[in-house]
Image 1 (cartoon, rainbow, N blue to C red):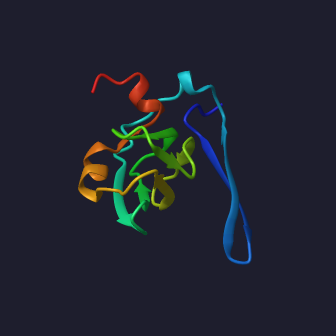
Image 2: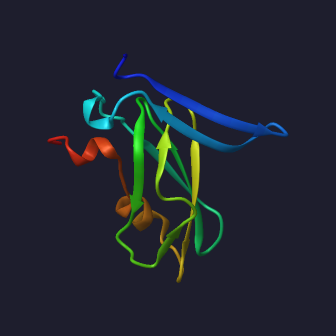
Image 3: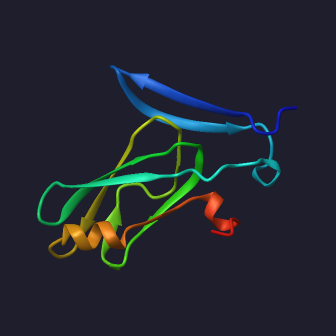
Length: 118
């Protein structure tokens, strides 16, 4: 069996992806992942909301977002990123958002970060 094989599933309805999933052909501990190289772009939506667009060069499994501020609520916060596809998450704050502070304090990690030396 091929250990590094990932099967990405998407359900589309009306031209929009309404559900997605990932099937692993081996346990993650047996797979050889590369550093995902996740890029992020933060766009303000209002005084207390922003959109975070994420992309990755290599598969990023079990991606998790956190920030310096404790009062951030993410629309999704445990997901997989497929190379070449944008994934958008909204973040909402209790108070007013400082965009530059949000960009600097936004931490994005994945399964790779749990065992890499970097």
